[in-house]
Image (cartoon, rainbow, N blue to C red; front, side, top):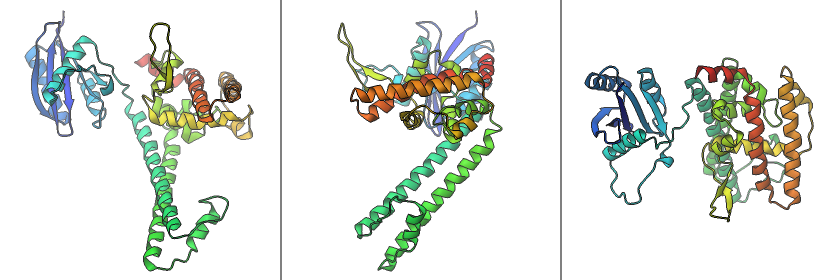
Length: 377
């Protein structure tokens, strides 16, 4: 029988504190020391372990999810090490623990991995992660533009300048800002700097969206994106965002798991015959949760296949179109019933977003690109 060794890694920017636990409940757990956080040093460390414990030893490792990403896990997998990236919030802790060091953390990870007490997170494909990072860069640009707009409006409001038009940041509003005459040169500089910041952020957004459109055709999940665009409320960018954030759909065996992954299920504190549910957990992927709630707004309107939606559904199977139409009818009916019960509108939208997860799960599982990946895994 092959020997197993469980590795706990406390990963930092510059170094990795390592620990190893031998198999068996009473197997020895010891610190292996510190190594540099670069892939060459990790490769040499794995080689030393195999030299000490035999080439046939089965190595299983783990480290906490954090800012260092998944590069280490991917490299360890290439070296034949089963490596899990674990959720820090789900690591068991003792209430009496008052001392925390890097060495203790590594030893604890090794012990818990051996005991099977750790919850791994999903490690995306490197290409999927790159697409996800691209849309998040776009999201950062959108946030920067919004902040600059708010700062500019606040600056003008402090000095008594109020735009009387119908909508802010329209062409008329921007023309008003360009033609605004301010009494002091410093104020003119401030106005111009804010306008330049807003324009620069807008250019960043446009470049990111153009790159997303160009890369879509090369992406293995492009069929899933096009299928999702057949759903009401999902344009190309929104569909790419959600597909890149969800990753491999076949790891969810039931739509409730998708809802829980996105933090759209209610908290619960029940005991005996009493059942008490509260607000949504907001655990998991906040980016995808925000997007789903935004897309759910479209289902407040009555079911209808518009010209734009009909164009996006061209080339899709009858099954995909049927799922899209069922979603429209079901979700609009759900929304109107919740409002009839006098539920607050935002809560009703979150409930619609939760049910929308189920239709998206059903639709994406029909796509061959996911089925092929599931067989390879």
